[in-house]
Each structure stands twice: as C-alpha cells, then as structure tokens.
View: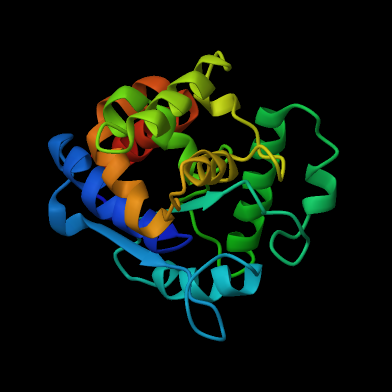
Length: 227
C-alpha cells in the first residue's frame, strides 16, 4: 500500500487535510500513519505559494524518499497568476474554458516536478477556484454557528450558481473575497485560519464531495492509487 503526501499551500489547507480529509481517507482504507501533509515553505519564512522555486524546494526531499509515496499538491487557482509562480502560465491563460485551463496548469506543475527528478507518483491538483469554494457546499450546516444574517447571505449567494465550483476567481468575485464582504457587512471579519476548517467540519466531507465534482475526482483518484 502506497503512502500519501500532500504538498499544501498554507496553514488552512494543512489543517483541512488533517482534520477533514485524514479521517475520511482512513475510512476508505488508508492507514493514518500513511498520510502526511507538508506546507510550502517560503525562503523568507512562513508558508504559501508565491514562487515555483519554493514549491520545488518543499517537494524535492519527498521525491527522493525510498518508499516512493503518492505525492499530490493542494493549491489554489486564485492568484496563481504569474510565470514566477507557474512556468508556462502565459500559455495557460489563453484557455478560456476553466476546466481546460486548470488541466493545462496542472500539466505545467507536473512538468516543474519532473524537472527535479523523473517521478511516476506525482498527482497535481489545483483547486477551482480556491480553498474557500469547499465551504459553500452546504451553507445551512457549515455556517450554522455564524450570525444568522451571514448564513442567509451565503445561502443566497450559492443559489446564484448551478455549481458552487463556478463561483469565480476574479479579484472581486473570488470565494474568499465574497466571504470577506459578507462578514464585513455585519461588522465581522472572516478569518481563514480561524474559521475555514470549522465551517468545513460542520459542512462534512461527504457534502463537500457531493457538491464539488472536480474535488471529488481528485480524492477518488488518490484513494485508488493508495489502496
């Protein structure tokens, strides 16, 4: 059975893997000690994806492990917006269809990894459009502990889209920006680190998988490769 390593963008994604994904993956037959999450480390300290070199430096030791784990990325499409972050970005943005664009971006991320060392077990994943997308899967449950007005505004927002994965990534319309605006309307501050995984936990991984087909395909692929 293969081990599984997530290379994640930051603290919220790391906590999401450990609190939400890990129990689900265990229930699907992947042992707890086979699952690991590693945050991308920036050269000046801290965590995040602001340079492909930081990503490559973080993943490189994993690629040289003798047990050859399944390695996957968990990073946002939103703000993945330059050649510095993703070589080949200029080519990717020529795609007007979001799914084809994301597929091409994942191919470029795959090329970046293969430039370190030929590695058969890397599965690139870029979240459409960002981590916060997952929080819209079932707002009546996920936002149940928030101000009722915040919950109702999120519910109304979700009604505007046939799929929550379509909530777009423009600077004004990204999921995190929309949440920030809703919270600010009621004099609250949306704090990704403090709020996001609590909302995801109340939403449940089952509902997230149901409402986010692209995310589900990724998780199903990881399980099939590890078990």
